[in-house]
Image (tube, rainbow over all chains, first blue to last red; front, side, top):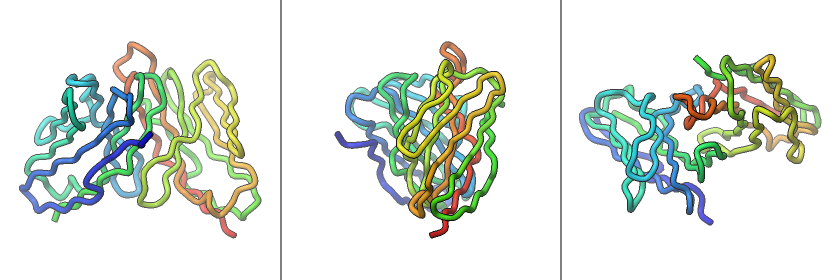
Length: 113
Length: 115
């Protein structure tokens, strides 16, 4: 049973470009969470999704950021018109039920030049 | 904020010694989880302890939870150099609350175990 998969593992973008981060949850998991980690800090919640639904997006910036988890395929975190402050590690986690353990992927490290 | 806060921020010990890390939080919780992160890597889940539990063990790990004091501790016994990592506590809010699904992480404790 493969774990949570994220790609790409590293992503370099220039200011103003778009970044697309992908997350495939563990098999059988329908709950997906995105977190952001700045250097030397803990993880900060961004968004919680179930298939085709956004359950909680309270941690996601109102502008430039969007997330989806379609019926088929991976969850996507999209950052439009990236700025240097978006440079961080973005982690995806999944769980079978909302109250269960969240299993994390290896993360995508975004660097904005 | 219900953010978990950990102390110490950094801990340096010798191999074979025990390491204790503490986590405090502010709100009622459904459960509390401890994670480990090696430098530049993803998070590895260690232990989940529910609000109605007081203590759990897993190998060399022992976690306690005191909901009256809103605090938890992670004890690693007989530490090894390979235990060197950052350790985070994360809390999950009560069912039905606005923070139920997400985990709220502390800033972490950086543990260094010297051979």
